Length: 173
Image 1 (cartoon, rainbow, N blue to C red):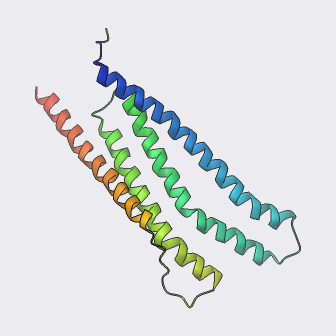
Image 2: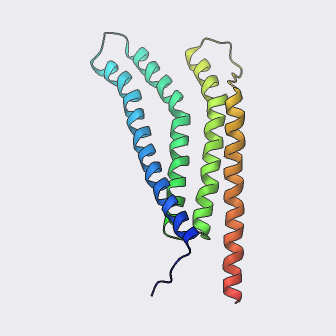
């Protein structure tokens, strides 16, 4: 027999369920966006003008470089989706969920590193516009996003430690 849950826990589960649906919708939207961004240069390469194949390959490569942060953010949202699935099932002190939250923060930090450093540098190198070196695209908003992603990553690790402590306490009692 299932014990009745306090209103706060039911509310937390409902919120997690809603956020889970939102995460799935975001993943689908990101996927559709990627298909259209990659599809345009691929279709141009296959059915477009008579440019040399190297120019088409170059254009596709630049699009894939630009999409690197998108792939990393997609994985961050996917990790959060898995964690939210645990939470909507009432598994609040679950090590797997906490690990997913930490991974989401790590992927978000990696995506921000790609936005700030990797994509601008690789784009510059592939385009051969520059003389080499590093390109940095640091904007004020990115600093806030780095702090937020770091907080998510650390919170996930704290939640994992709390879940492990709870499991040890439950085993002891």
